[in-house]
Figure 1 (tube, rainbow, N blue to C red):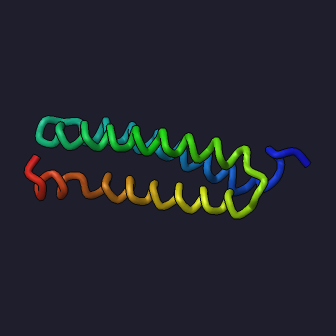
Figure 2: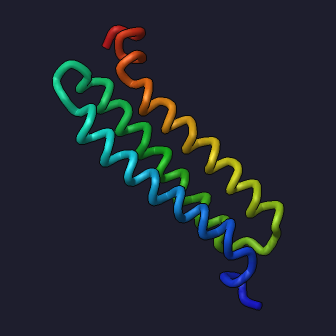
Length: 101
């Protein structure tokens, strides 16, 4: 069995999380990139871009790994990072008011 055929489901889920990051960035741009919260939206987009780069690195590690524990650990880290980005997306208006941007 080759590397890419082992543990196919967790690897597919990780690539799905990467696609969700891209969807979240597009949604952030179209929903929040408006005048009252444009500074917060710019900072959110930059944070999401950094998280996307980190996600791509995790995808690379995951794709070339043979150990199940490494694959599940990268899946867990990716899911937690995405949930943090999703929570920040839904609370962006409140965070802007709280921090005064």
